[in-house]
Image (cartoon, rainbow, N blue to C red; front, side, top):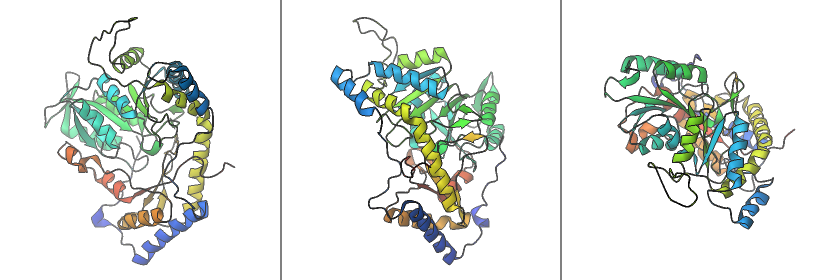
Length: 410
């Protein structure tokens, strides 16, 4: 597993002279102007790009009337997506949260179980756990990928959990800890080898929240192939989009069959009768959305290439600015660079909001990372380990515009 060095704690924080802090804000703004000029309209954080066959495929759905959850484009999208990510099965859903919900159900999570998830994640990760009436159990992150810190998680489980009869149990609550959800933040693959081993030792189902990592690889293998199941998202702000949509990925044929069954209201196949053999969900992706997805997949390699070029240009622009670090892909990985992010030095964290305000006012949309899950009122009382690294990342991170068309390819 990766060795990570946590940032210094707040009480030991290096003091930054106010003039230097202001210079950093000015230097970042100057770098943005150097890359993009003076915007005549606001540059969005991430915009969809439709330059291929999107209109042709969508028009075919409209012309033929096949716009809902049955149609040839859904089947084609699933085949093409599975081929792109190198897994056996992809099951298209109406959004990424529904895909993650299905993953947790098929991973064996039941009501009153606990699910280990990062505190540093989008709200959908925690909400999907709540849909099953299970309990999110928040774990800390590391500073290289911003994903779950495998080493700290291992040591934490040694203190708070035990395996009884092949089941991981929380000593304090008595509840089963059923699964570990790994989220690939901004498309940067987490430390998967180490996390797979933690899940194996503690008898946890490993689920990848790969919502942000389509086109990202860990040691040559696409994310989503390391857990028993994975969830993708194709929201309008993702690397590619189907408008709204998601997918369940798995290399287990039985799990794929179950995913498709329960995501289509658990209807038993019949020519005309309505028979349902369990509680199911109306989570199937509509054909018209899948048509968008097929066209987007055709252009995905080009979009990924241009996003990597943008990340390289950001790296060059910020290289000479002291106190600012561009988040780059971890060693041995290839990131899709969904959202570029800079990290401010510890002593500059107090100027984060000043930087955000300056950039947004100048027309460069920027944002902080999500509010950590344990700070939200509905999740405040959930079990958690010490989250000091995630809390410092939250205080120091700024996302920057990352659309693939922002800078022309060389």
